[in-house]
Amino acid sequence: MKNKDIRMKLRYGENPNQNAYLIENSQKSVFSYQISGKEISYNNLIDLDSGLKCLAEFQDPTSIIIKHTNPCGVASDKNIRSAFLKSYKSDPISAFGGIVLLNRKVNFKLAKYISEHFFEMIVAPSFDKNALTILKKKKSLIILKLPKLRKQIIEHRSTLFGDLYQTVDLEKINKKFLELQSGKKVSLKLVNDLIFSLKVAKHLKSNAIVLSRNKQTLGLGHGNTNRVDALKVAIKNMNKYFINNYFVCASDGFFPFTDSIRLLKRRGCSALAQPSGSINDKKIISFSNRNQISLYFIKNRLFKH
Image 1: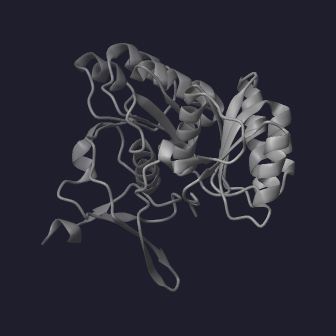
Image 2: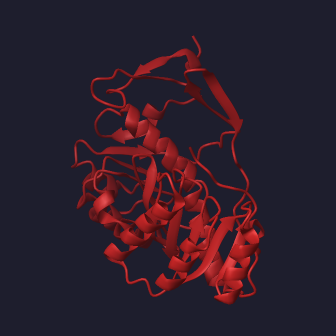
Image 3: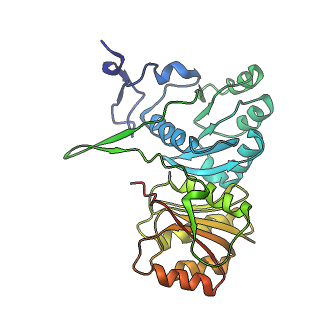
């Protein structure tokens, strides 16, 4: 029997009254990467999958905290401990019970800080011996030593009407992904914040809004049925923990009207990145020019359903 045919029973499904199993589709089982902790559940795997896909966007030391498949705190910094602290402070309430994904080795100091909070899972490419000693004291904490995995090319999901397949969006989000539309240019630092924000927005459920500063998420709005409410939620979340003297905004879809951009301007937004495609694109550009807002159109839409 091939690995892909092996059914691995999971702790439970999306809810405790649902049964679930995993059919392996790789050479090595996810369970073989587990160092410690309770059995991995269906929801753990869904969150892990979402987090790893987001983490793959980043090269700098980066920490991502996932809750219900969405990032709730993301930060990149000069070292992984600083990145984790910033990601946690982005939204400590939502971080409770989440999973932490790191793209650098975990040392004792970082492990000590992580152990002071409640998380479901910690994922990193490696751990110091002393770091594992302190983390293993939490018997239920799932610890995964996970190397960089090969990227998917095709993804699929099951529906009532059959299995849907699509190619994975592997377009790199960098400076070439952005095209300035308004006359006001911003610093390279703010452009990098826009790139950071777009990488996060790509992995949030639509409608998605990311407000960030210094490669740290300040406020996130996602899963809303309209973009205005997504923005209001992001601003509300930002106001809980940060003084918004300036920030940048990334949206996974276009703003069709100027009301949201007017709100962003009033709150101190320095730059905005969104896709084009609205019949009001020219009005949005004109409004941005009149109000000295740096508006960038992005190469592709970043919807996630």
